[in-house]
Length: 204
Picture 1: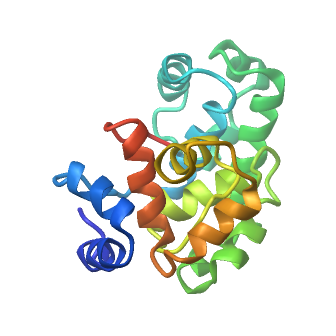
Picture 2: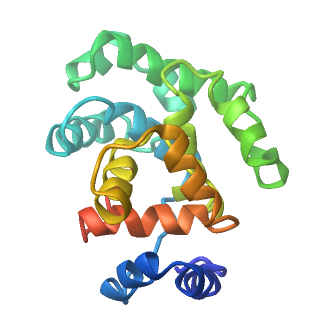
């Protein structure tokens, strides 16, 4: 399902930025798609940290067999050694358990996220061990479908900006200044910049 703002954002970005317009034209039939249930999305993000997409999928498949309902309370009933047997590192097993506990006891305010600002959601999420700002920003883009998130520290975004706009390395401050020109549609601009590097959307 395409976000309701998507076509409006595309038109706005293309009108104001000829480079972005070219990137958008090269990817006419793809768009951001929602990622599903919040706990599932965040658990998968933790599993995939600092390993290849292929390795992450392998670990996730084993985790999904161990915890078929993918619910926080079910995860909390699993022994840490069994989580490790899925291929999770000791640290990631701790992170997954902490995430499950915070969902189960209401420490993260899932029901309030739709009414919270982007920065408030980020602040809520980074309480969880293993979730930093980048993971929270990916969640805002891919799960909550927020339209104006700009993950300036994302390496793929930085590379795409360099190749499309500058042809040389630039600072995070320069990338942020460019990003400001795309507001209030920075998530959409980011997504198309990722597509300029890889036409196939990545599962975050």
